[in-house]
Amino acid sequence: MINALLWVPLAFGFVGLFLPKRAVGWWATAGAVATLAIGVIMAFGFESGAAGLQDTVNTTWISGLGVDYSLGIDGLNLFLVLLTALLWVGGIAFAAFREQERPQLFFFLMLAAETATLGSFLAQDLLLFVLFFDLMLVPFYFLFGGWGVDRSAEGGPTAPQATLKMMIYTLIGSLLMLVGAIATAIISAHGGHITFSIEAIQHQGVPVGSQRWIFWFFAAAFLVKMPAFLVHGWMPDAYKAAPLPVLVVFSGVLAKVGAYGFLRVVLPLFPAATSQFQTVILLVALASILYGSVMAFTQTNIRLIAGYSSVAQLGFITAGIFALRADGSDGAILQMVNHGLVVAPLFIIIAILVERTGTEDLRSMGGMAMRAPVLAAVFLIVALATLAMPGSANFIGEFYILNGLFQSKIVFAFIAISGVAMSAYYALRLYIGTMHNRPPSQQNHGIASREISLRDGIVLAPLVLCILGLALYPQLILHRADPSVQRSVSAVTEGGAPSSPSSSESEELAVTK
Image (tube, rainbow, N blue to C red; front, side, top):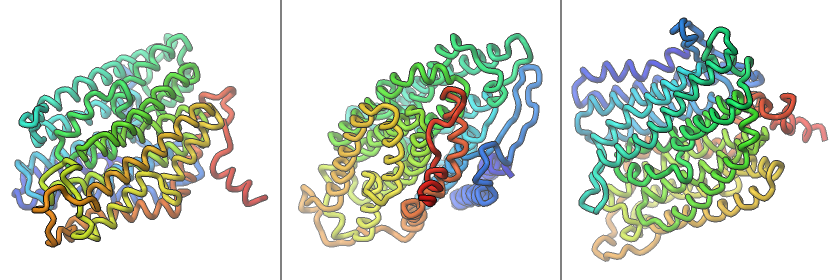
């Protein structure tokens, strides 16, 4: 079934190349729904108490180089796989409701990108992981460049120029990671048989001296992908140029691959280097939180407000992972899913607002709540989740992260708390500026309804319901992720002992008391 999960989107994409233009959007949506259905079935069969891989496939691929076609599911990637499948349904369905140029190629590239992204989460062979990690960029290169927005009239770059800038950044990181992966396999072999199996390399061990430089090769690739502060230069132009249906999945999922890579690859394979450079990465994470938050409430382009808020949220996630405590990493996984569920409907709402108002400038918007109360209510739920309102799953995720930071690096935790306050400002600024402020032009302030359409409501409703569902029961993720998180984090701690009580153990202790 895991093979079907991985390859069904690409198969639907190939068939869609030969379908009529009117049918291809619905065919692509059906492919995304089928992928989600397979993921849900696998999730129901997942054994929540197990720390090891489940539903595995392990086949020799390139025997001479020790490369295997190895896939598996565990607590680290289960809900990221489900997030990927769910957001692709939303992104493709939203695009299918609108006319697209060259729709056969557009939807093929969307589905090919889904397969590559799923492969990055499922791969358990280091070289296979690098391969899928790089392949993710190819469909988005063509989607951004071929269907993107030309900003040259505004003094900005064209879509191909913005895409090229993104590719230069990400490819440099990817090439460094490829070198690091090859070096890891060769050095860990200790003169014996070379293997790229992540589990086997962890068992064989990498010498501490080699860990120090290989760590930065992987860290560079993952930090660029997020993006993190100092290596985020590609993000503003790419986000302004990207087609909004594509940006739904790009911002909602691809940034998480970098954070996931730290948990899957860096912590288990380079534990000594992770411990040594913990403070450096935490400084990068805190800089991302502060810089992303400040930029989010100084921007007037609503795309960039959402884009910089993602920089800040990925900073929180990175801080949770590098607290090097199980509660911090539990919160990081929960927050990865939360952020994806929030930012995807946020960009869908942004697309709807742009269609209604004809502008992306926050200063030219306002007054939508009177003419679109249902849209305003949906947007309010998303905005409150973005600012981590107490009672939301985002609040629980940030609480776990901050708890891990307080136990590990208390000074960093106090600084990170400021990012929570700033997120409230930029989220409410975006909501109030679009929904309640009086528009500058009285010509646009009519009483005609601009309510959300039924078709867009069908796309948004499942995402909003997932936000509300996780707010009521975040343990759905925490219980299933915790055993795998414990195993990953304990690789860095002395003697492999768990670094802190797991969420399940804490709950059992509370019940006993």
